[in-house]
Length: 394
Image (cartoon, rainbow, N blue to C red; front, side):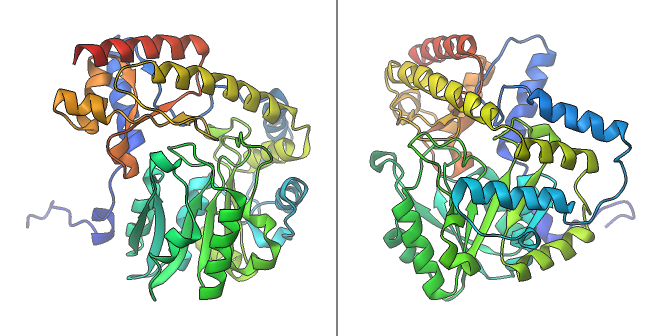
């Protein structure tokens, strides 16, 4: 080995760059070349951050709230998180049972680091968000995948989970509403999963990034199952709820012992979340929630538009998503006709059809593509027209 050669760690070799980031990078290159793209790939709201939240951040700068804060976040914000959660879901956390993080992804990553050791197993339903698998593998953990099917509405039950449990199971991961499918796990199924986990001494980690974008009725958080509080790890984010993706603000609600370990890890990594962002988050949580309701109403309209359009394209089948802002159509018939897989189909759709999507392989389920409808109605119409034309020509 030459003096300039670099030997990278085994753990960095266990992960890959985020599939959605890789596709966004490809799209950026095409745009720089003047290509007009319709973007169904973005996993973020198209709305601007509400004005009162932006003003809180500006005011924090003007008042020089720009120094270090406590590692776990300022007390006012931690208290606001638990009070908002209690008001909306009936949970009973205290401010010291939450930690504020640099985005919801940071809360997930750190919690895996704190709880998953080499050989520990994490049960992950399929389809799954792109980063779950890599986060577990980075820790040296093993992913145990539980398949769900579009034909059954991607339903997840305790019986399905139980079959995957072994003596090494440390965490059962649930994500409802789901990215990428938009499926919502029924409250009774979630409760049964938590009861099962608690009886086996297993944690349930609930990624509730899209919990406020549930179109089935009243949103449900596992945090409401207060009798099982010691078994629950609730991961939250302000990114999707308040259109604050770039602000990077998330949180974890967990047993005090877990939060203490998360705080220790955070003290040696990112330290506190950005001070001014914490003030913006405080405004988001404590002010009127009408902005959340308004965005949700528009998503419902856009959902109908994209799903109805996808269903009119020959060879495409699409469930009606029950939450989040993604459609996850089955395009396996189109891919088979063209003699390619959905990785190739999504790539060609980008480069030849000029529509950005994410292939199902990134989420553990080939034969599908993820289409974000967090965009304008006009963009949805143009994207659907391009997809229909491209698929017809294959």
